[in-house]
Image 1 (tube, rainbow, N blue to C red):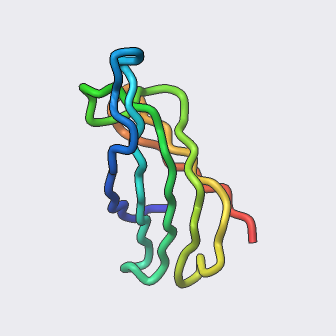
Image 2 (image 1 turned 120 degrees about the vertical axis):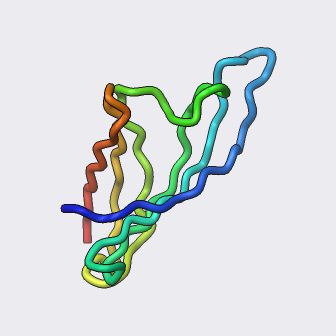
Amino acid sequence: MTGEVIGSKTLVKIATDANPSLERRATLMFFTFADRKDQIIAFGVADYSPSAAEFDAGPPVVRAILGGTGKYMGARGELSSTRNADGSYTQAFTLVR
C-alpha cells in the first residue's frame, strides 16, 4: 500500500554524562491513504544517538497505533518501523479490530 507519512519528534530524555550516546525521542506519525480519506495515527518512544537525525538501521522500532479514520476507523495495534541500510524505511502495520 502506498501513502504519505507526516510526523513530529519530541525529545523526551536527553543524553547524560552517565549515558552520553543515548537520548529518547517520542514520535507522532500520521499515515494518510486515499487522498487523506483513510488515516492511521501511531505514537511511541525510541532510542536515538544524540548526533543522529534518525534511529539506527537494522532492528525495528515498535510504536502503538492510536486509531484511524475512514476504513481504519477504530484501528488499534502496532507499527513496526525498520530503517534500511540505504536510508529508506519499511513500515509494517499489525492491526486488530
